[in-house]
Image (cartoon, rainbow, N blue to C red):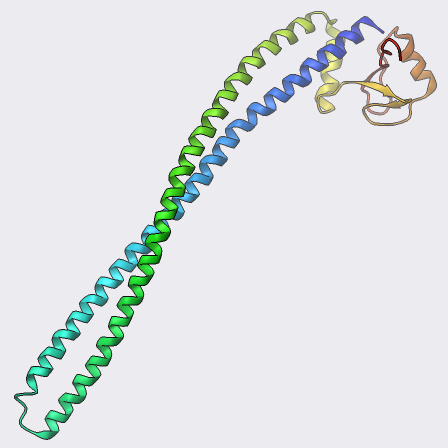
Length: 239
């Protein structure tokens, strides 16, 4: 195999590794943002629940004030029973007292309904608070792990970049430029094997003469369709 071609294959392995490292590094901040976003949504949900509880408490207090007002009104009417002087006034006052009692019972029922809603929301709030506290710990731990991973990847990136620089130094400038142009246009893959007489990049059938040229190894040979540089995999011993 052409010596420069061997070096290109080795360089591409390093470049693809760098691509993977950079891709992982790019994903980590996004993953951290996603975790934070999920936590913030849960926190917002809890705040909405607290807001509902506050609104119910205000509603209950208003109803309790209405209830006390109605109770005072009933006490006043009941005391007035002893001072009315006609049967008609007495009967009218009794009717008003009866209607007042019904209204009082209705207000009490509404107060109890609100209290039941409060109890249900207090229970829900307690559960959500516990879940949110646990989730906060989990998110903090996951964020630490991701940040640690990012630091390891940065260190790995520097090591592989050093290896990449060394390999680039062993390749002729014009060949490296050609390799880079192809890599930029072909998703990072510039050098591909001949796979059963087909291009390992675009999977098109290769003319026999082109395969012979690859086999000779005198020059770099490219697929006429995708323009990737071709090579033949060397057979391992015993195959």
